[in-house]
Image 1 (cartoon, rainbow, N blue to C red):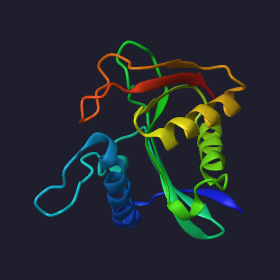
Image 2 (image 1 turned 45 degrees about the vertical axis):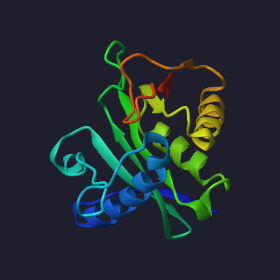
Image 3 (image 1 turned 180 degrees about the horizontal axis):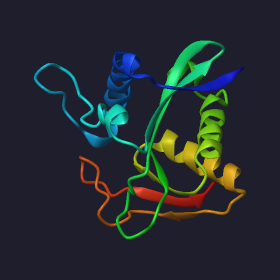
Image 4 (image 1 turned 180 degrees about the vertical axis):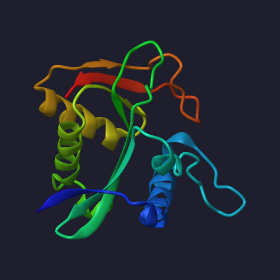
Length: 168
């Protein structure tokens, strides 16, 4: 499988917005969010990816097919630690899960954006817990810090996030 990252262009905004709805629908089983009156979750920060610097949205492309996205920002998840980058959102469509696509995509993002990272995960999202534990451990050769239930990192359901700290 050939995995590539493609920077999302402004004219591809609607495609990313459509994928974000699928992502938010899936994630709502963990954070209990509701849709709005239009039946959408909406992503309030989407336009910032083309109007503010230090925001990067990438499509994950597998053998020429759209397989998901990765969104990177420089805003810290936790306010008491310095960071250069964090994964704002990450989504791989079901067809491509457990095939190594997600790992390859994350490795590519981390190689593009060298520096100090923070990564937040929802502890009830067990597939995500397994994925991030494995991927970050593999990428860093076990050289990372994980803080469970980090203060002031509540999801919409009130659950405190687990936060990784590592370098790329």
